Image 1 (tube, rainbow, N blue to C red):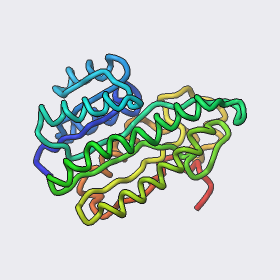
Image 2: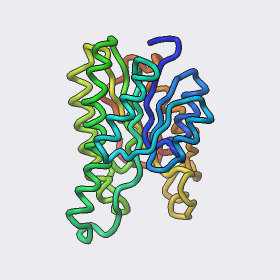
Image 3: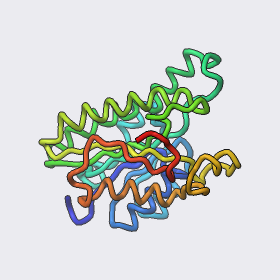
Length: 234
């Protein structure tokens, strides 16, 4: 990895995505940021990065942020596939359109970005992907039915990809946040979390930064829970 590595961070206009961008910037990363609003552009101006408006569900927007990163920096060392929340509601009330929207938002966004960036990393001799997922990927939660179901699929893709490209020094891991402070505090969230507090967006950002760094160089294909002990399975 170069002295000043380059990362793409999607959905980086606020919340976890913005915290990741700030953390990586503080660690010397050069950045290309994208969000559906102008927030990522504003943050990019603040951090001296590339910023553009686009949705992770739009293949053209994903291609554009990759092209912008290459035009500006000439390389891509890391990708953080962050996104918003897919539709929620009672399980059988969710429509086919809701499920298709969720597929675009939490699985195909990663598949499409990986198709774009993997050849660049192969040419460079390595790189790292980190996907921001959810605790509910392995402990399905009725509060998040589409996310629970489809992010389990994301875990499958992550393992398949990481096994295939590990020899080429290309890694992929998932971070599984619990209840985080970019959402409202409720008694339910506090009661379910053994630490009795919400996670901080900065804590998720530091976890992502670790997985992008050489400190995690022998970690790939994994799903790292950052949930304050929320999930019960072992």
